[in-house]
Image 1 (cartoon, rainbow over the protein chains, first blue to last red):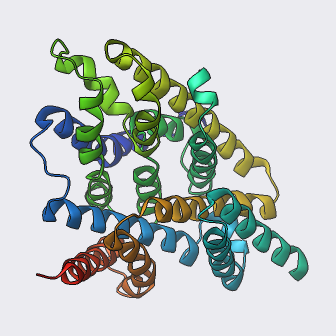
Image 2 (cartoon, rainbow over the protein chains, first blue to last red; image 1 turned 60 degrees about the vertical axis):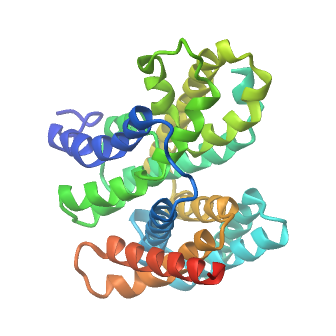
Length: 114
Length: 224
């Protein structure tokens, strides 16, 4: 296979581990439609677990960084998240301000370290 | 496309998919794989979970479980979005594409735009909005992928850092209930502990533990 497509096995894995397990919930929502209580305990627990899994993925990228991010020392990766979050909180939850300041800290730190 | 241009959230979407494209590159997936994932999965968290679990050596079943748990939140979103455009004549198959496009960005934008759109034109409107957002996602995935392939290590790492930052802040912004904020904080704190177990299911273990504690605390605070 050429570089663009990669191997077919990976595309099959995408279908089995990515597309189907994800789409199934949209289709369940489409088929069942109403009759669902947004505030039910089960749904609230599921949402909390889903949020915590996403938080775990954020932590994983910082703790076990992929590719180029591994060249950034740990304290700068964690520092960028902490400083970004402080700015995010101070700017009345501006995602943009949080991302820019986190990135700025990481780049400035990397430049300073040489 | 006019609707898409005026969307503030499309900037967040763009940044998120740049990060996803770069992540896919640095974990050795092909560009076609990354683009197909954006087109067919169309959910940032699920894509990041898929890429990072597969790259860290998880089995197909383990990745699928992590992805499907993250995708459960799409179910109430679809249930909330569809009544906004349903008419007594609407057939279920007319809503399949709307259900596919439903993700946090479209969900928020439907609340913003649909009240200004006549009910019988809403499905067409959402098809246009969804396609525009998907196009932004695809372009950003390709740009992120190519940037990660061609940039210096410093800028490459800056692009990879976009993903955790933009996801943390956009999730924090959407956390309205105590349970959500607590789940986010505990989830961040628990992962490093769970990763010491080295079970291959670290993300699931920390997620279920942190989410359950957040839920219990929330219920307990509500009191009898």
